[in-house]
Structure formats: structure tokens, C-alpha cells
Image (cartoon, rainbow, N blue to C red; front, side, top):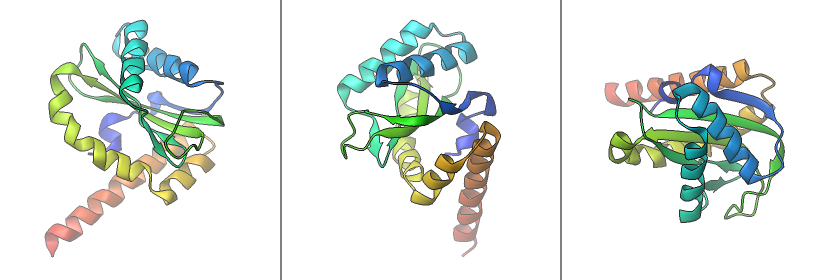
Length: 162
């Protein structure tokens, strides 16, 4: 799964200031609501419901919150780079400063579920997280994801050629 198939530059926020997990989930809901027309309160409630099932922090200061969308034809991602890490109740007790939120149309949830471990593995790569934390603009963050996708594509071509 390519990040650039899920994410677009308009859904990237760099230097976000927020003081709580609740506020982060509100920001994510506002962004996806503006993108899709989905009710922001419903998006927020879906994110909160998922967090009640289990914390979506991956460790290492990264979180992968997700929620269902009632409409849409493809999953949508929103990326936030925070100015100050927040307590996210992560399993490693590390505060979170990088979030990639996934919003998946209800009809695609089963189909998309197998992609989550791959996305989580890529997101927790230390080289990637270092680059994302150092990025100074949303354009720079977008470029990092584009290069990651290209690198992944190059690797799969090399494997299939052998």
C-alpha cells in the first residue's frame, strides 16, 4: 500500500499545536470532514470509539488512529506532525508527535484490514520517523512519503526480477 494513494498534500499538517489526545482527534476529524463532507462530530466519535477498543499508538512517538467513513470510495489519510509531543497512553509510555490517521469507507474495511500491519511497519521505521520529525514544511513531508513509496516500488521490482 502506497502512502501517496492514501494521503494528499492538503491533508498534511506540519507544526500542529495541541495539548491533548482529544484535541488531536478533533483536528483530524475537522480535516477529514472538510475533505469528504463527512460530519466532523461523527468522525470524532468514530475515532474515539476506536481508541476505546485499544490505543492506536505504535510506540516510538507514532500513532495510527483510524475510523470508518459512512461514505467514499477509497481510504483517506491525514498526517500530523506536532510541535510538542502529547500523552497518548502509548504502550511504551512515549509521548506521540507523529500521527497518520486513516479514514476507511465502511464497505472497504475488510479489504483494507490486511494493509494495516504493512503501514504500521513502514511508519515505525526509525529513518523515516527521523526525517518526518525534521521536516520543516508539509511539502517536505509529502516529498518524504513520495520517496518512501518510490523506494518500496524499487525494492519490489528488484525482488520480482530475481
